[in-house]
Length: 614
Image (cartoon, rainbow, N blue to C red; front, side):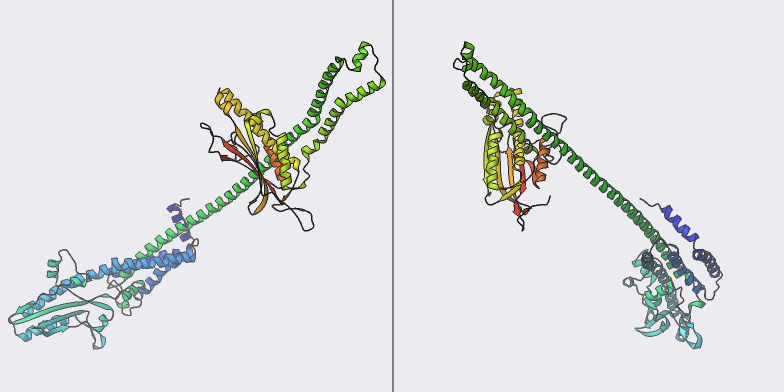
């Protein structure tokens, strides 16, 4: 969220209104600056005014520190330090250097006047003693008389006559101790050499005064000035309003020494206020960013919770759907075993009975035929015939119905039994050969192969009927896919493709390592078509559309998934490329891997699962 500058100004103004210190500072600043301006205009001195200005100057950052409470003390300290450094650098380049460069230019003009005056005096037609006296008087004006007979001079003049000292006025120690002594150039030659330039602190641009001759004597003139103070001394006077200078109280206003402090104060106020604004702006942005981040985190947490709830709800719905589909599958199996199969058995028995009676009644060798023709069958013949009928028709049908009804429990039982993996594999292969893909079309169009690997000396605990039912489902799907593929070829009148179509079915059994654990793996794969790409990642994980009836969910995959879960197994479905697929097709191997944890007895000899917990 962007923070408008008006909002920050409003906060600063409110802080000012709520701070008594800021209000007093504002009023005192206006009054004191007005008084100093009046005194400077009237050339008056105000005793100890620099102390009041110093206190006023430092009251501003103190007021900022106390009133801007939304910024931490460390942040305000950083703003103060940066503002102090920036103000010091700005003051040095734009106030200190500029002022003393101007002072040097002014002294260059004074030096030019003094040089011309000396040159004129020495060129006069007068006794040498009078010339010397005039020059001495001229140099005496460069010296100040102090109390106690001491003198002070900020100007240095040296006049040589024929290379020897003639007259001089040295700069006293009172100034050399605090000021840089700078050579003042000959302004005439300086302007000739540097047109439009002004003398500054670059000593490489120094141009000396011209020597001149008077009669047979050659005179040299040098002019210097204790111009700019040492930086540390000048800076300390600026920030302390010259209270560290004992002589400032008598000349602070008259010499306008306050100006250098005013300049620094203005620079400092500008930088400090700007930095406070910027840091306040950054702090506000950081607060808003943190608030938005916290809001986003809460929103993200809510979205994650909703996502997890949605996933849990989806998983629950998938489980409910799976149980419903498995229930439908079991219901169909039970109905088939308890209703359709017995009914079919009785119907077959009825048809067989009618055929038999028809044949026997028209057979002249049977006793009933003879009875029609007039011979009465004996009792033994009648009983034998009744027994023959029972054994031939009634007893097999009853036995088959009873067997079918007893098989009902095999449809729903999950009670495990420990099997040797090699023996179980042989039993599953025998079941597959007898009951799976045993129709004429499958035998004609499919090549079924079996592979076994590393099966010796391993056991599994499972219900073999459930594994058989899983293989029944897988093979049933292969048969259905085979029928659909052939129907499509027939519908397209692709007779060559129809006649040539052939597919492979592989059933592989092996003990393998996976994720650091040992598993009994049953791999079923066929290359009739491959799994559709739109559902391959969903198979056995969630209900998918039925391949037979549109609008329905497939029951077989959920049936397989449930019983694999019940034995703590894992199941995967994926497509494997078939490089030898016929030209013009994109047939793949549809692969289903079923992983069953190996059985290992625990210390007490009871069954235990070695791979994972239920």
